[in-house]
Length: 316
Image (cartoon, rainbow, N blue to C red; front, side, top):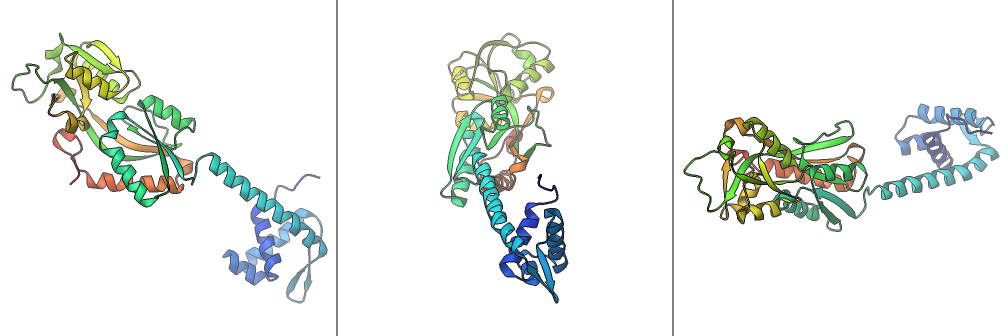
């Protein structure tokens, strides 16, 4: 015999509450339901089981032996399902004392440490794993369930808003990075057309800044002479420091490199912004760990304000 499709776990929970209390009113109060809702659930359960479970004695409903037999199995069924749901949530990483966060390399200077420090205050026992990579890599790992949340540029990514929640943190402008001894004159902004003959280093395809790099030079009307591509922004800027070439970088890097590189804003035609955001699966929006991350993200977004050229200002 197949189980009737109308036999739900909710009906079983109401049935168990009634059997434990022996009274419809007490079961209704316990479950925050009306007496009518409890009575209807018990009546339809009896219909779905297709055998008598109760008899009326005056205004009271009394369980028959069949109801007591069903209770034994209902308790087991609900208990097994609760454990199954808990195990499934644990397998998916929900509510555990372990969280996997992915980030762009450039966000490890200021943003990620601030968020992590705040999260540790909210959830002291939480262990955090940090993965750094390109926009493309981080999105792939999130979609495959290998990361719980990622911080990246949503400007340069295709985010499925039906599947993912997005919490913007700040916007950042792109700057030209030049060796400290490069002769750039006294200009306050950069026209990329003046750099047609210069060599450039860039991030590899899949990184947020690489997309902006291509777009800027497309506006300038020529292909940049890229002499080397690397897989992290710190290596790229080390090459710029060594004089290998110029680069385009987000303004958030100025804090650490302002004394060792020249960082100039791009002229109006080439200006572009990156919107940095936290992204995670929508079906996990009630996960306590993600709620802590979102709370810290909102605080961080409120505290920072646009600095010169649109880069985030240093928090006070």
